Image 1: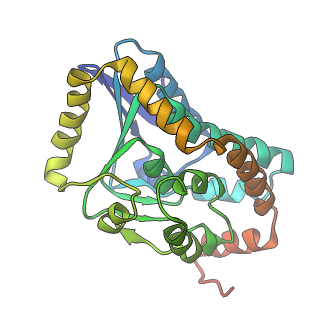
Image 2: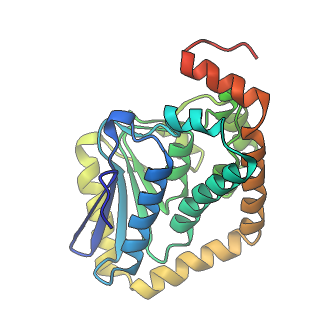
Length: 259
């Protein structure tokens, strides 16, 4: 796999996959979603890889969907929106079902789909300065696919608080909400994540890690695929709504919207 949008390296049985659109705050577009999915599958198939670290270049982990992508969505047919939503679903399920442990290293803001990306990983480290949030409702959109994973990590009360308000929250709050695993100082996070990954490589059976991850997924999320299929349809339908078009137009023009 080669793509300038995603960097891929392997060292001492650890694959490091980095989002590489720093000029766009590592925002999602179809090309990035496809490249990231391909990189994860490459690491899954690589016999030299036992653990995966997912991180980002630049100052933002991921700002969610990018501007040009949001504009294009307004012109999509229903079938195109379903197909695009399924591609996003594939990215998140690839991480969730991957037979290898995926560790997120969040050193910048993780917003909307970017927050979902941090949430779906098996282990997530973040710096105190990172902000998290599912801001979709403020744009007339819904966090459909990512909510399927969020609801497995936190309570209904917390999910309603963060999804219905769309407010940003700190890394410490994300930790309290059970969305991430560790908060680590910026000067230490590289080494802490590397040490954690190396510990898994040296002290745990690869087969046992795989089966344990599968066991947790199957016992806690027996209805996940059904929920995700529903989320794909909701995602596509909401993209066709007037509120979504109004929200995106406001976002593009940088005008505050009055709902």
